[in-house]
Length: 463
Image 1 (cartoon, rainbow, N blue to C red):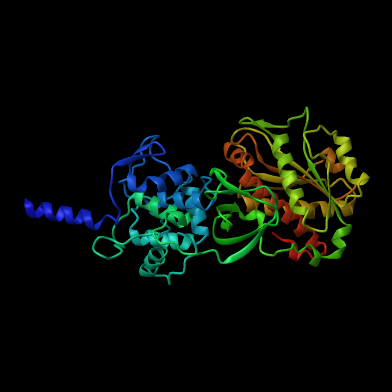
Image 2: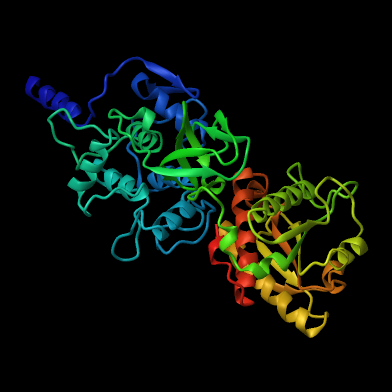
């Protein structure tokens, strides 16, 4: 009996990382998170990266499954987590992590097994965790478990076992996976502090929030002025970890550039003769579609202003039919391009239908003169392609429609439907500042794709 007890205790020691165990602490309301992991679990919970089985239970001692690992990593990297069909026979669209699994596989972070299986409920070992995190955060590890373990330990992300080994074959608990993931994201949690700020970058906008984590869910820790010089370290999804003076934290990479001056001067000089018309739909007394408390007029105005802000760093001239919450008639919108010497016209909208309807689509009119119709289709196609890549929603395609602002325009024109405000998944993106930044950049790059197809040199302007 004593001998058996000894081996049980020894096995317990060998499966526990080298942490100081203390009393449980309430991490984001979780009563089962040990004190030594409370800061890291709180951090992930704040950003919506990790959650528990209930409001009070994190299931700290349970072993992480492959599906849970995919969800944790996917949320951290802001991968598309929309539940959908996957390439695996054992992961249906109803699996809570199906979207993250498919996205992680497409990114090369995870892979499957023979027979087209993913084994979503297979428990993860410490060695597998090391490989997952090394791939997710771009650490060089030579394709081996030992290399991945070294990559994490050298950065102070993971610790060894009580017997001096990494314990690659031991299963890893949810609480320890959370600790290691938090350390990979935020170096302040690491056991080894190294200076990773090797790149110099500059901010594209003023009053820029620096946040404690890689999403708008995290609190600001400071602000930066436009054209501020920063030292940049690693990226987490579309966020970059930076340092500027005493301010250290994450900023959206959308607001950073790698050159001190903008590259507009190297672009095609003919672009300075081109005027882009941005038309945020609805406004004022016309709210447009409404879903989950969100009004279309507000979403599309925010998007239009963001696209306009991106275009300010280019030679293009930009005019907006409205830049405030103002009602503009359809006739005035359609005539706006002609009155302002416009060259292309983009009307920005959000769709509405039943709760199940989802996706992104773009319209153009085939009723205008033949040259405009062809260019309108080209414009719609280029922007649609970028929008689908940005949000990865259902691709509803490029379609013809005789909407007033399209049929009665004098320039190539397209009407964009970003997503369905009445669909919860689409709405979550429409109300997110982060996802609107992504979409705005997609529209901006789609405009450049159009001009590139028309023979203009826009290579230096892509973001």
